[in-house]
Structures are given as C-alpha cells and as structure tokens.
Picture 1 (tube, rainbow, N blue to C red):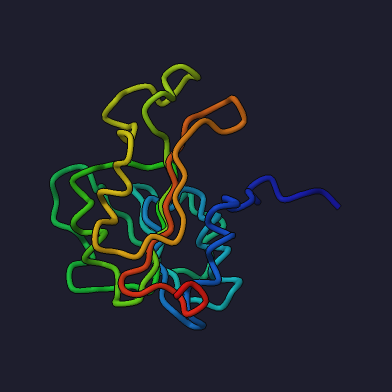
Picture 2: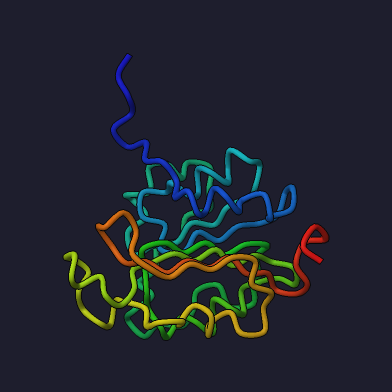
Amino acid sequence: MGTDPFRVAPSPWIARFAALVPAGGTVLDLACGGGRHSRLFLERGHPVTAMDRDVAQARLAEGAELIAADLEDGSPWPLAGRSFDAVVVTNYLWRPLFPSIRAALKPGGALLYETFAAGNEAFGRPANPDHLLKRGELLELAEGLTVIAYEDGIEGGAKVVQRICAVNGPGPAALT
C-alpha cells in the first residue's frame, strides 16, 4: 500500500491545542489550503467550516462545509454573524481580517494561529513584510484573550514563526 500523497500532517502546534475545543465544538479553518487542519478536527468529531480562495485544493477537508472566498479582494467577510468554538489559521496573514477573526470566536473559543514572522526573509519565502508578522503582533491580536501559549522565533534553523493559542474568556480550569 502506498501513502496518500495528499495526506499532510497537521501542524504540531495546532494538534497540541486541539483538545481545548469542546466536544462537538465548531471549528473555522481559515485559509484551509489542502485541509490538513480541517481533517484533524473532523476526525475529532467537530463540525468544520473550511474557507479558502480555492477550496478545490482542500482534499483532506472532506466532510467540512467548504466556502470559497477571496478574503483579500475587499468583499465583505462571508461569515458575518457566525461564531466558532475555534478559529485556526496557519501560514496565512491578511491583517485586515484580524477584527473578523476576533468576532468569529465564541465566548470560550480558542484562537490557534501560526504563521511566518519578521526575520523569515533571511531563510527564504515569504520575505515580503506584508506577509510576515511583526514582533509580538499575535499578542496584540489576542489582547483581551487569555493566552495559553505563545512562541516567536526561529524554528529548526529554517524559518521564523509566531504562534499563539488563546481563549476568548478565562482559560481552562487546569490553568487557573
């Protein structure tokens, strides 16, 4: 048996904090790409909404609600009025979406965000500052949320990333 060429492992950061999403809680996989994080949450029994400019590539998101939307063309946020128990964003940055991302978090909802940061230009792409988080920028996005974990730095000598796991409200009881 061969391996599925489309089966891409979820980010260890996202997998690490997936348990923060309550059983049956809804998940938004924003800029879902091939759907690796959609698949992670679907396999955990969560209803998933997977959104990307081209959802045809979201092969691993089978079973998710797929929404094709160009989030950078100035169109209104396609999920106005909807909220989720988790919003997952990886390898994507479009700063004008920050207010919509925050508004999409239910009380108690988890923000799981991971993308490239300033300094990554020394390692290759992305190198455009518009696509690289500034130092501490995810902490600013999460202001008013309970930060569970945050990282900002060089990973494996190959890229610079920022990651955050934050909850909209008090953190899990184990942390209080």
